[in-house]
Amino acid sequence: MNGWMGRIIRIDLSSGRQEPVAVSAETLRRWLGGRGLGVKLYSDMCPEPPDPFAAGNPLLFMTGPLTGTVMTSGRYQVVSRSPLTGTICDSSSGGSFGAALKAAGLDGLIVSGCAGRPVYLCVHDGTVEVRDASALWGLNTQQTQKAIHGQTPAKTSVACIGPAGENRVLFAAIMNDRDRAAGRGGMGAVMGSKNLKAIAAWGSQATAVADPEAYQTMIARLDRAVDKNPVTGKSLPVLGTSVLVNIINAHGMLPTRNFRSGVFNDAEGISGEKIAESLLQRQSACYKCPIGCGRTTKTRSKSGEGPEYETVWAFGAHLGISDLAAIAEANYACNELGLDTITMGSTIGCAMELHESGVLGEKMLWGDAGRLAGWVEDTARRRGFGVELGLGSKRLAAKYGRPELAMQVKGMEIPAYDPRGAQGMALSYATSNRGGCHMRGYLIMPEILGHPVFLDRFSTAGKPEIVALFQDIAAVVDSAVLCRFLQFAMGLSTFSEMLRAVTGLDFSDEELLSVGRRIYTMERLFNNRAGFTRADDALPPRFFQEELRTGSSRHRLVRLEEMLDRYYAVRGWDSQGAPLAATLAELGL
Image 1 (cartoon, rainbow, N blue to C red):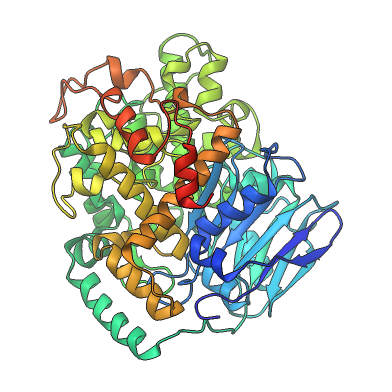
Image 2 (tube, rainbow, N blue to C red):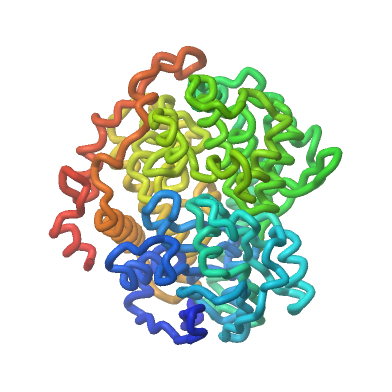
């Protein structure tokens, strides 16, 4: 097949049994791969939502038809039910692991069951081998990758968990290619519950391209488009994602001290410009990426990749910390131990406000940079107060009787854009199928960065339509599978062109939008079965009751109810957020 390898393997770690999973050409066209096909296969296997840590809860590692072909195509998606939120969840990571899994001959690997001892999987030439990982259990992610590289061919890419995943911390990440993370939703904890330490992939199988001449012409043109775009050609290569620190702070939307302010007075001290001046060693990039937004950095005592914008915020402004070296070292620790930096930092911020309010005895003080790395370590190893931090902010705040202090949606912590400063982003957070997430529909593009056009960030008019559109396009890109930064340099028609050149299938823009809508609706159906309703499409009370007092978003509140009914109507859902029968029929669900 052009684009796809035509092989998905399911392995039951309890029995060791392996079997191919047949997927029709029609199914591939309707779901593509990555997130979309993963959600489809997962939903078919789990008509009743399983306990995330049950042996029967499958964990899917998925590539897409564009994986390993065009620019930024080294990504992969991990799909399962999140132990942090209870929603269906996909978590995405860059690097080269996705391309390696595809080169090994697979469109996907489905892992179920639970091994009787720690194991890791070797994927090559369309086969899966189970190896003993007893000697790897307890190692951090970098030690694990180094050990496996010593036992496998040179071009092997490794995805693994660290102590956080082994200990089933609810927001444990899967790390690959040293510092790349499938971070959100706790997929590393699901992996740990199966006694699965790592997956190593290598191979030399090339993805067949339907029209090589058109493909080469397209690649050259897209390289020029990426280079000429001010975001992908200048801002991200020069300053990385932390270029956003000063921009978002200037808009009064940089969440500070657990979202009590949108302005951090020392934003310059944790900005992309400051990272370039004080920590940067070199630019880094994922597989076939011409952008190179990654930062390889070094403090006096440690080195690693990052911190990215979300991490700079989570360990910086969110906690009232401006010590950039301490932020970077907390980031390095999360990468080594296997933790999602957004949830980690947000939960620490929640604990700080709980302490300040007098309900938490543990001493957690704003601006305490000296204890930051220790809190990360304790959380991953489930020791001391780290056991409680490992609950995530929703469970932690509820335990101490102040649930309103958890800045989360559906149990997933909201990232670094205060929704009071952008109404479309607020709606996107509230309706995200995996919880508080900016990547389901990145309305920062039009509301703050003016791409493809500037939208009035304080207006609710037209936002339901735009949010649904952005969410559907995001689902397509996550299913192709490509980096979402490409959306700055190209529109939906370009993704259609990519798929036509590689697969030979004549995808129209309208068909791709239907694919995205189908994926989003299928995720919603699963969440409805798991008990989620309109009541869960909400934001913390702070955003409706407490105006921002300073900055260019001052005196603003979120006006979600002005948008939610219209959003449901655009989606073809009823007033409680359940897809209508006519919508299911239209999408073939």
